[in-house]
Image 1: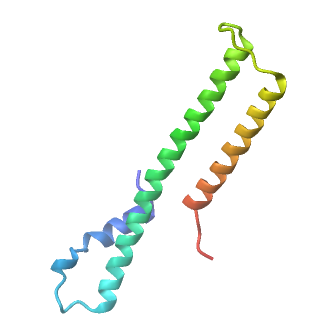
Image 2: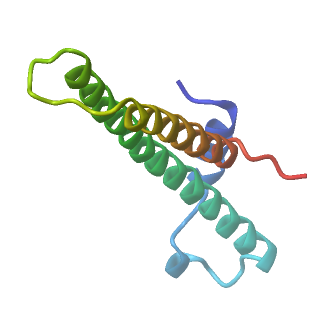
Length: 113
């Protein structure tokens, strides 16, 4: 499912040609517009790439914390942490997850003033 922005960028970038193929009769404004479109497309691709990596990092981080809590709660393994360590683990995990999520969402959905 493509958004309107992606469709507009596809339409505009379909007109793009490599820099080496740009004829000298193109105006400087047209070349600047094409470079701007290439920059926007690269920004979108990089945002998607890093958002995906950050998502899986957060999922992994939460899974590790859940495994630690599970092992501590159910004495399957001889594994026991004190209550203060468990509280610190949950608190720092929550703070880290919310902070990273905030910055990623703020960057992905940034609107220029």
